[in-house]
Amino acid sequence: MGNTKPRVDVPRNPAEELKLATKIFAKHQELGTASPLNVLQSHTWATNGPTVATAQALQTEAEELQRKLNQTYEKRDLLLDEIDESVKASRDALLGIYRDNPMALGEWGFDVHDSPKASVKKA
Image (cartoon, rainbow, N blue to C red; front, side, top):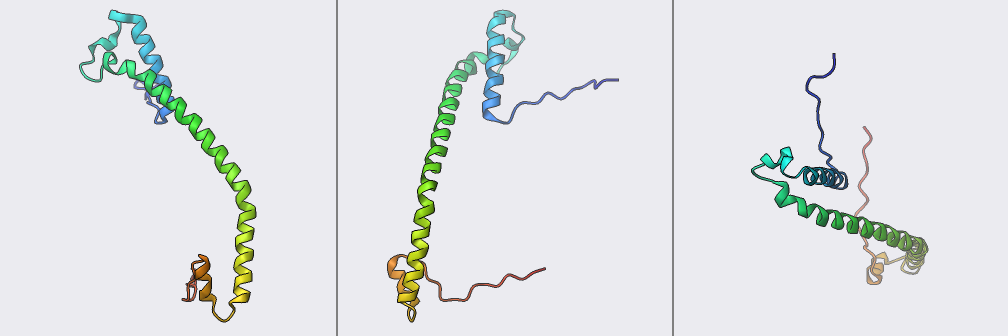
């Protein structure tokens, strides 16, 4: 025997919810005055329906910006690998030069800690 009360999920993902809202609003408009959704007293499609397209446009824009952001991070990371090596090499060279006074590396912008590193206790 089948489930007599199936669960009907609403997507939690904004992009998926907007796709669903677009379908609902289109069907509501198609049925016009015969739409069963005309009974809604609040959160009506007459009020919220026109905003679906705006929200969808903003979703598309956000996805494009996310794509560009990811590309920008990838380009940065390609440069950062070499920069990271320069920073570490500079630290090592300066530690050799200021061997008796490693706190002097603070003048170069390094965070220098004179307390011992906390030990990690194993369980």
